[in-house]
Amino acid sequence: MAGYTQYTDPETTARAIGKEIPISPKKSREVCRMVRGKRVDVALRMLDEVAELKRPVQFARNNAGVAHKKGVGPGRYPEKCAKAIRQVIESARHNAEYKGLDTDNLRIKVITANLGRTTPGYMPRAYGRSTQWNQQTVNIEVILEEVQ
Image (tube, rainbow, N blue to C red; front, side, top):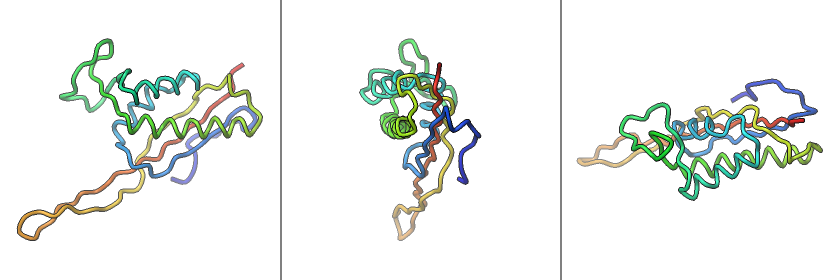
């Protein structure tokens, strides 16, 4: 990943990247879709509720066989993804505080989850054989902007 996907005004925005986080790319896309455009305090509260299994995340794609949750439709509780994305948002919020932005009036302008490098691995099988058992990683990018 070379850099950020969008150019923004450095005077009103703060950003952060989490690189090669060992979480599911499919689930992390859905969590990012859930918090995109929200205020930072609301998004952090939502992610805490997902990690505590109180708020399901709606799965819009890859939802064959996913059980329906009340008021959401097909959804799950991706705890690991919620905790990892929360850390990146917190990092961006601390960057905004360092830059002198008003941290109470921040909104998530851009949040993306892109595939990172795959960590190769193998699982031993019968008769001396093995099967690939790779670990996918995700690069999470967050850009916060100050709202008037």
